[in-house]
Image (cartoon, one colour):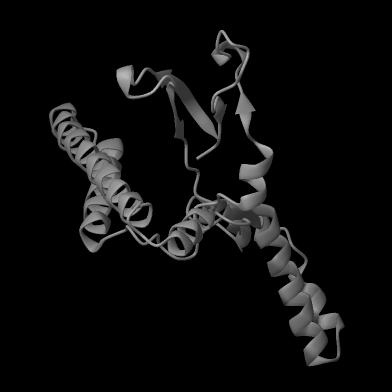
Length: 206
């Protein structure tokens, strides 16, 4: 998506203004995937035991076959699990890390997450403020490092000195396709010159 564009005069160099634009690159994350899970963290053992005591476990003695008895126990157990710990769905995108992700960034993110958790669970107000101060400082360092790594990554792959075929391949990797570029040229009528002609006033998405 073209975030902004404008024109500037080149003075005596040429009678035409230079048109420039800023393209907002959005990395294609691909299709989301689903992961099914159960969360046993906040389950109360007392409540489950109370509910289990109300189940008809003695019915297993009515089954002459051992397999039927096991199936009945499994059925009652699964009923309790579904009631107190239902199956949930979590959507996620990339399974692999981006190229710009480094081990240093990973360690800083882990430390930031640890401080955030400690800050949330700390009851002592003085220690809580200390955790918060350290967390905010490390959070800002993580954000700064992420921006630098992303910038270096894009500058490396969008270097104009690269061969045209390699540069175009990199653009398609970032989600910019040939069909998208061809169908999203924009002409701004306010840039029409006094002679009634349009001098390169088409602003593309790249």
